Image 1 (tube, one colour):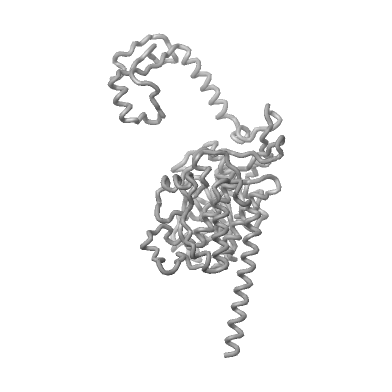
Image 2 (cartoon, rainbow, N blue to C red):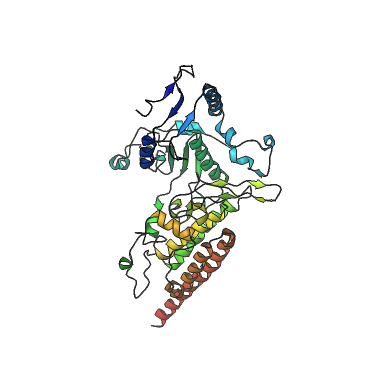
Length: 435
């Protein structure tokens, strides 16, 4: 109805009869300004009163040129488009490593898998049924399938894009390719999940049964009354200080593998407890690299270039990620501090408030989560964990330690706590012997 007063001209503009000029009535503008809902269009009114735009026949020509360009981009190899050749650039200040675009598919191994079976406990436990593959879970982006050999002595996990929820696009392919190539480059490390195959938007990875997040942070958010620590500090997990330090050291070693990669620094950019899994021999391994940033190198300044991820969401990131600033690998250090806090206390940072906006505003203002000072006096190891958290939570990235300093710090602390435990055990044995 808003277009009843529009003036139409009947020149051919690509098959559409478009108005030479149209004006929204003032009452319509006022109504829309109140509703502020323009569907998929992000619209901000720049001036009051009438809003109009002149349309001429050349608009169809502009659209056709734009459409042809889009089709050209769609038909190009997404990796070629994303990972261009440096010699083709007019500027070369920041150069990506060549291996960033590598892709080594072994699709035949994927096509041999029977993906027709869903998980049922009875069928899996039936020893007469060679149940070599079955669907068992999913995340937001990917379905997970368990693949077993005939005698069930070996097992891997197949992670596939959830096609019922997400379309296959060049961007999603590039994300999975990045996930795959990082694991491929770091497959030698005992701190990184093993990968056995990559095809399109699918990966085959090491099967690891034990997640640690729920054991480290059983509840996570609590009120002061629920915490019940008026007379004595109450860690909310049951790990010993030696175990906590071992986990912290393993996580730091994982990140050091990324930050210290000989062919270029890799920033994980999504450090959370849930990214680590525990193997049967009690090792922690890091996975999920689809947000990883393979950092570019500045030939002129002889240093790595910062990158920008826009404005981030959630409540587990560094302050600079919430303000849209340029970033470096120190964002991993800040989030690693959150992990150490969770190990120490069994709680999430800002455990009394689950609102992301609240937490973000606190961090951007330079505030950090409360740490009970009694932890510093409770034991040597816990005091050192508090010291480490405070180091990681420095507001300015340049003031935070690098991950290699953290690894060295934790090795020293862990070694001393381990020696104390062994001394205590020896004393107990000698006392019992005397008695």
